Length: 327
Ligand code: NAX
Image 1 (cartoon, rainbow, N blue to C red):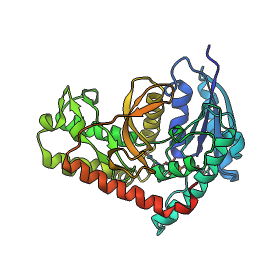
Image 2: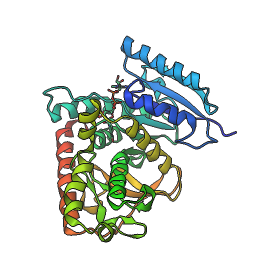
Image 3: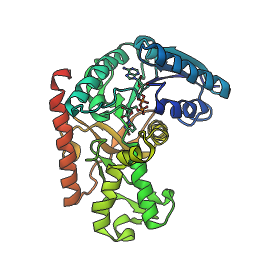
Image 4: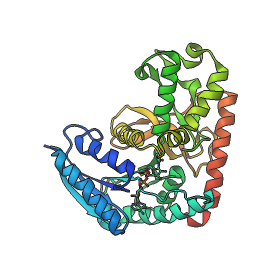
């Protein structure tokens, strides 16, 4: 039996947490032979901590063979202590009439503190995956606070967008999602993100040839993927939770599966024309446990380049709005 890994999850009493924790405990994220200890972090509010206790009771009631311990805490030092992975799901939601800049600043404070503490108390091989929005910029802020952990340890999730794009292409072509390959998300986890259909294939043939409808690909396809979050809210009366949790399982599982090729928001280092300092969705190949390389040299046409320019501008603008919080 392998020794257990410690997985910290923030916002564990929230709706994504509820869908996520049983998947981690069942082995879907780290494999069927990897025991886990869950370190669940929430805000110091009695009602919330009580709800977290309820979540832990349900996890107990599943009798997961791989679940070797559950820690419930409102103390980040305990939550992130020795954690091998920190999954930063908790964030402040955008309230009515709240400006994006205010949301960036409020959440910036949370991720400033969490970046610092993970750097101080996380495991030697600590890795971070950010889900809480605005995910790319929150991740950049957390990474900027680290002195020990290098920027590559900090990733943000664009996998939900990739999964959404994959299914839309499969439905349009009348194939299974497994027939769709290499659909990558470039840029921000926001409606400006670009699902780069020009690089994708269906059953080994370019998507543009199989679907043969540029107007649909450039218009409704990009729009559906970009605005899917809002469509879910309109239909369900609540934001995506099960699909977000499932995509986070995919994000981490593929970052720990050597050879996996997938979309992850990482420090761009100037690739594909992005501002070098922002965290942008990019195609990566996993090269080791949590290690990856960005795929370089992929050919992008003028349409793709214009979309990337727009999403890069948004990321750069977000960076400017939180400039005083970085470093
Ligand atoms: P909920 O509001 O249901 O849960 C969030 C939880 O986080 C709450 O229980 C809250 O108490 C906790 N929290 C807040 N600040 C915290 C802190 N400093 N430390 C620990 N816990 C804290 O939201 P939920 O639907 O679970 O969504 C969580 C986040 O994911 C939101 O920011 C949301 O916008 C974001 N999403 C990101 C997605 C992505 O693809 N990157 C997609 C889904 C989702 O919209």
